[in-house]
Amino acid sequence: MNIKKHIPNLITLINLFCGCIAVVFVSESNYEMAFYMVCLGIFFDFFDGFFARLFKVSSPLGLQLDSLADMVTSGVVPGYVMYTLFVKSANPHDVIGSAFIPFLGFIVTLGSCYRLANFNIDIRQTDSFIGLPTPANALFILSLPLVIEFSDSLMIFEILTNYWVLLGIALCSAYVLNAEIPLFALKIKKFNLKDNALQIVFLLISLVMLIFLHYIAIPLIIIFYVLLSVVNNKFLKK
Image (cartoon, rainbow, N blue to C red):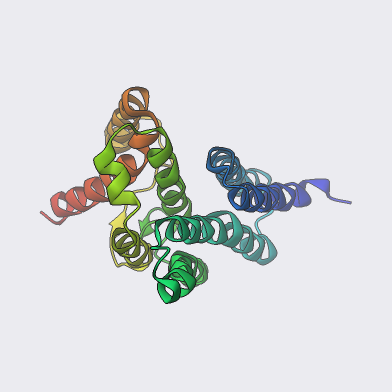
């Protein structure tokens, strides 16, 4: 029995397990633990592919398992978080709106599902991404309730508890996930400064932002990632 061929799939299932636990934490409004479980799931999501390549055991089954696990960890969980944010921001006097509007949070889940399915058949996304990867989008969405909870800014609270703003975020999220925007990958394949300058600059700036801004840095880092990719694309065309 070749045990090595099962290791990547086991790691993928651990990613799925983390996503399932995150769903429970979201249902209990424990957004911080949900965030950490999604981070752990993303960590395992990175290493399943790493070990598949290391052991040379990549398979169609592993590819499908990976997307199915990501669908929960990076699709269902952020959609559920958006749903709960809509619930908390709904006007209690608007009976119809408060009953139906929160379900629009699952637009994020729909956008994630479409991206994951498309990713499996898009041969252009081997060394870079087209559209925002679902793990990055999940971190963005899961950071929002933490920004609300740990920020002392009344303006930030009012913005992120406005359901029109939340609807805009959900729609933008679904769009950016599937937009034809080339985004650089963080994988380092050649150990030299010239080929990895962009990744190193991004990681260093992100680290500084995390140190000084904590949870508020997370959505800013994701936005910075997209903008830096767009600027980089402009220079590559020249």
